Length: 70
Image (tube, rainbow, N blue to C red):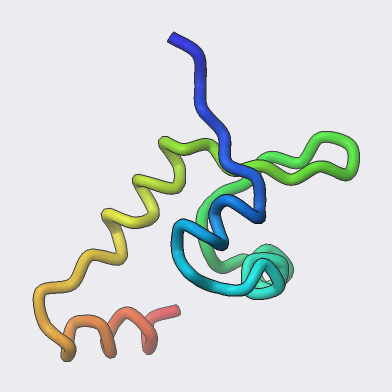
């Protein structure tokens, strides 16, 4: 089975955020793990899905707590 990757534009579209936000997150160490080869940045789909599962909330208070921790 081959690994699937998302480039910055596809991940930004998936999450409906600016590609610039992903750039900032890489700079500050936030967001999912990424792979950089040469000048190209990609995200393993498995890493993206794992990051999404850690951000899962069942209440708005829980979401606020996630923001404070980071």
